Image (cartoon, rainbow, N blue to C red; front, side, top):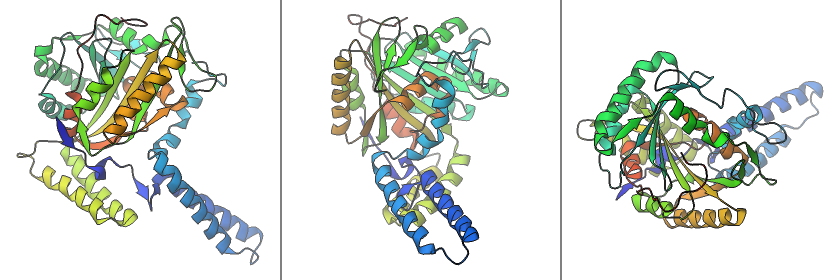
Length: 392
């Protein structure tokens, strides 16, 4: 099953080919230095020097941005590492990371986020109603994470950013029960949800020497992450099935934040203008126009936009096994023209803090929900013959 991926809405914002945030930062810094230099040495400083240095740095950002399209998000998220890890790379026992019991079936983080966790007791292999489910959850304005594993059950985490949105969370909870009733969704108790959300922290976590992976304390397992940095031409369910066919433990985490159409349309109109004036690409402009035309016929095309992230986490019993599995996963992604990167410190810290605060996650795409529905249709039935490590 395939669905087209519209590159216009999945590409992070750019300014003349460079990621937006560092490009703007470069411009501001160069202007500030030039004004200060002109003030200290009036009439003695040639402005062409700063124009040249600005262009050199901008070209460097374009090259860097080709390797890491989400450079803006990563730079904006660097504070996450500083606040959650010590200089030695040991995890801080912080309430920011560890949820507390809030209600019978809810947990809360220090930042005010409230989360609920569903476990699907039946395999959702071949599920076809994700599209309708996404549409029905749209008005609730919740954030959803679907965690598909080849060694565990499938989990769905619903979260809201503040306590006053608890009513929307309640409605979304009922929506999951009604839409996924055939797959026996069980809402975990607050204690079980807390255990699921923090289970990787219980044994202690630390970085390996070269920061290429995490070492999970009690079991002496190794974990690393592969992130999607550029989507392919088609979102294909077979890609996810191939990834989940690995022998060692794999988690594919789909992060979804819904954007109602009354907000999506102005956003796309603005981005279409920005894309035209910063990329000078008629093709990109027309792709935005295609999406806007579909959203304008909401009855015939009942899709919404959503912010979407894909994280693939690999756990292994040795570094060699971990590296081999990562190479195989990236080869599968390459086959489907999805650009990926093996992350070290940033993404692994994000893994431990992303429930439910995945809005901090830097590699987020803006995509039609139809595409996401195809992605979420790809799961593998849990295998009983291969379970080891930190399961529950």
